Image (tube, rainbow, N blue to C red; front, side, top):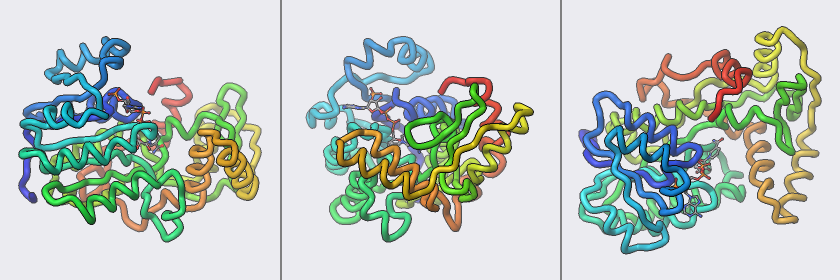
Length: 311
Ligand SMILES: NC(=O)c1ccc[n+]([C@@H]2O[C@H](COP(=O)([O-])OP(=O)(O)OC[C@H]3O[C@@H](n4cnc5c(N)ncnc54)[C@H](OP(=O)(O)O)[C@@H]3O)[C@@H](O)[C@H]2O)c1
């Protein structure tokens, strides 16, 4: 597949947090991809009409159906050679059937499972991390069962847009000039801007010789929490009130959330994983994908947060 050129791409989860960025970058790719379709639900068609109309005007075809219906998926795959899943965590269990149907189809050859997060195979302890369960199972399925389809996994760091705002574990309150950071704030983290995830997918599609069958790793910039804080303080010209939370406290909160069945447990787990080196890699694929110098800098990312740029 080293010289494979995607001719008809189908995107699942297109209007979600990261799907939007990926589709927007697919639409504006140069040279253009010949055909782009999205598969979405009737509900999304009615609730996100403006976005879908914009995409239709740009040449995107919209297939309406239910990702849980195998027949509809089978029909949607006709003539598709490349599928990109951007399904959210709440729908990751449906990917197995999407992949099975793609493998059985006559035309689909390349599949990007919904990853766009930290590497679920980062180190031996990754196997025990609950947020990685479905992503690891998908990788296993490709390794052991799938015959006619090649995967590409795009591994990225925390989205800087989502990492900055304060949640129940850590983050920044820009208005109040407050920051809650984990440990001593010195651990490096490979952050990714959401738009850069879109660029990463396009770069991978344009370079099958680099990307087919691989878990690619990209980061916009690798910085510590303290460096992010220092950039906020520099741009705003004011000091923040900073609280440092020990890792043991994060683990206690995470355990409490898991015990309660609170969905914030995933957030706590990921914040813990990120601050203990889970989003730092010996080698990134930025250069191999032609992305060096193309991705957002810390300065730009912080400026966007201060300006309240929507994402
Ligand atoms: N690195 C990070 O910081 C970070 C942050 C967030 C997410 N992620 C990762 O990015 C990937 C996508 O996450 P996301 O936040 O973009 O997803 P999302 O916005 O929650 O959902 C994406 C799309 O999935 C479809 N979907 C969701 N729930 C569904 C359901 N129950 N039934 C059918 N379809 C459903 C919808 O598709 P339609 O658009 O067709 O309606 C939705 O727009 C995940 O793998 C997630 O782990 C990474």
